[in-house]
Amino acid sequence: MTSSDLPDSVRLALPVEAADIAALQMQVWAEEFADAPALLAELSEQEIAEAWHRAITRPPLAACRVLVAVSHGAVVGFATTMPSDDPDAAAGNDGLIAEFIIAPDTRGKGHGSRLLHACVDTLRADGFALATCWVRSTDDDLRAFLTDSGWAADGSHREIGLADGSVRLKQIRLHTDIAVD
Image (cartoon, rainbow, N blue to C red):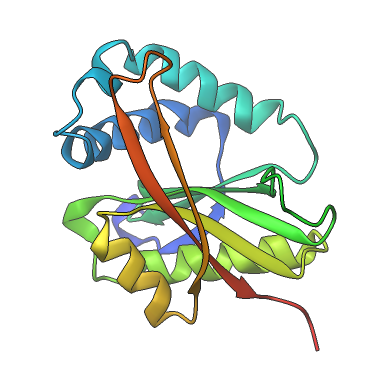
């Protein structure tokens, strides 16, 4: 069986895929944050790959996971799941999808849906009853994808950015109930 014969799937990331994840993240961020180049100016793909390798091989908590969407043997998306670190989170109840990225040229082919379902299944298996995800306020595509999948804004918002205040990104929080009935 060759890599082109492999079915599309989602699974835990392998350490060897850290560089692929970093490359995909840099590609998508370059497009998404084109209006804020200072955010990316100090990032090195090598440093990001090393950070992903650590996240995969030595996560800070057992409930911190890196998932990849794979098509024909290649990483086409990734996401991270973990306990929510939001100040208003209910410890042990609220899980977070902290990163959710699909390669632009593979969107609309089911990878995002498979990855989102795997994230929810992973959070549920880790005992969480509520899943949350922060979305850039201008990311209409991701927000529409999540709301079409049953997520909703919960009224929370924040700004993140550089410490010097030169770049500020507004985000809104979406959530969905994932409790097992």
